[in-house]
Image (cartoon, rainbow, N blue to C red; front, top):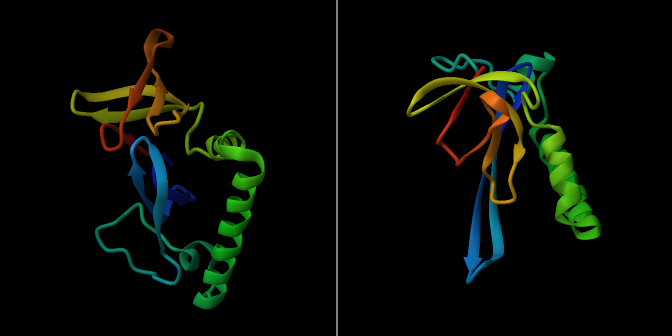
Length: 146
């Protein structure tokens, strides 16, 4: 789900935060934080949260999970180095939660229905609303209700 949640079985199991370091107009670096719910089983007052253990039904070795995450990060960094941003962005957008499906959203104006069409280079969510109009939403300006 845009922008930073990883869902499984419609439950949030992971959150990713990225802080970019900008020098003039270029991204000079990024700091990436990943919070993954691995073996936690109780999520009081968080009805949409879950964990790998809850979904898969087994206890995970944290060192093994960390190793697998690092391997995947290396793979995607190499993909970026070899084929550039556009291919990585296409892969990312192909995995967006509820992409091309009618969905309900809320923003400061209230509830509305739209269809997620992608994310811009700047990170804005592209949502098609009535009459085939595309609106762009910044981080936290809109919430997907699921």
